[in-house]
Length: 293
Image (cartoon, rainbow, N blue to C red; front, side, top):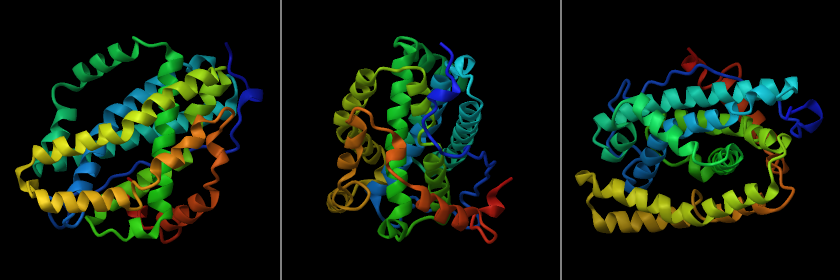
């Protein structure tokens, strides 16, 4: 089935591929708990960073399965931008992960254990067990998760005010910005191919109910694997604050519109937020201009 111009639904511009190079541990060494003294949030970010490279490689493969069927030149360019951005995200999170492993985060080592080719082969084998439409539906749902988190990170002053390692925050802000730039690409490929609404909604429903428990168990495992984080009372107090704070509280409620038939990611307008952060990060005096290599 050819995926043609008339079926492209998003008016979003092409995602721009920026070749970034972040400087973790420079000039000052990165603190072990790099979110200033916040143990659970430090481990949450480490867990997500560890998972991003293999996850983004899988997202790229899910879209590439349809590349020969895309005839719309606009969608083709958007897909190329999506693939380029996701590839750079994986590259830069690997750099952070190397620093995290050196700093003693065993959970990150789990994601990087073994040879890259062997890990990729194993993941591809799992992907091939499901129809390609299901794989792409999973990518579209995961992209909605990251876009929702990105909107929170960039749009909430309270989150931006959290003290922590400056370069880690630079990475997270850049990653969040580009997630919003390409938030609807995988979705549009899925819809243009005629992906069933029932499958799209069903995949998200399955993810919806395991996200908080699954991530919570991952963070707990990360903390337990790190002796420098064995401070039960402090961890309990900070965990309650994290669940009640602007990163987690209400997050799943914001995910629910995706479960509505006919939903499109661009129904959630982030245009002004993107423009503000484009000036902030990459304008004439942008904070990250010197990170583009």
